[in-house]
Length: 110
Length: 119
Image 1 (cartoon, chains in turn orange, cyan):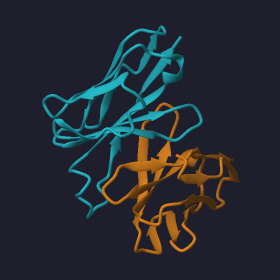
Image 2 (cartoon, rainbow over the protein chains, first blue to last red):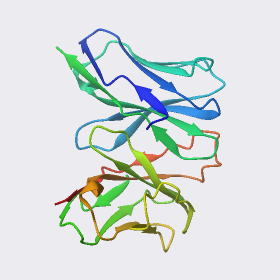
Image 3 (cartoon, chains in turn yellow, red):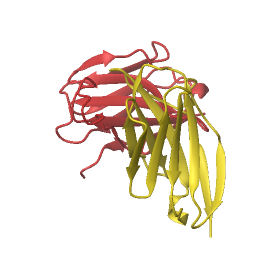
C-alpha cells in the first residue's frame, strides 16, 4: 500500500459525521474505491468513484475526489456503532489490479 | 454459498513446510485474484487469473509462491519452504469479467481469508 496513504485511526460519537481521508500518488488511476473490513469478515466494497467525477453520493456515504491534489475522502453521515470497522482506500490504475492503503480504523462510541 | 469461500480458515505450520490454500470463487466469475494482508497493513496484490491462465503474477514475492487454476474455477495458492515472514491473511477475490471490463468498476468480491501462521 505504499502508493496510497490514510490516517490510521478515527474516533467519533454515534450520530456524528465521519470523514476518512486518503491520498494517492498515481494520477493515471481510473477508479478509486472504499472498502470496509469487519473482524473475521472479508472486505466489503462500499462505493467507488470514477476518476472523471468529483463527487458521488450513496445514501449515508459521500465520496469526494480532488484529482488535482490526488485526495479522496469518504464521509459517513449519522455514523452508527455498526459502522465501526477498518476502512480501506484503494486505487485501480488502468487495467491493473487494486493497490490498497493501510486502512483507517473507525471507532464509533455510543 | 453465494460468496467467495476459502479453506482452511486458519492454518498453522512449521517453518520449512509446504502449504496449500484454496479459493472457491463466485460461480460464473472468470477473474480471480489473490492478495496477502499482513498485520496492520492493507491487502497487497499477489496474482490475477483470467480463466485458467495467470494474467499477472507480478505480486508474487519469490519463487516459493505459486498458484494454479486448472479448470478456471477453484484456485490453489501454494507456498513452499514456508518462512515466518509468510505469516499473514491470504485473501482471495473474484470478479465477473476481466479487468478490462471497466464500465461498472468491475467489483471484486472478497472471501473471508485464510490466516496462515508459520511457527
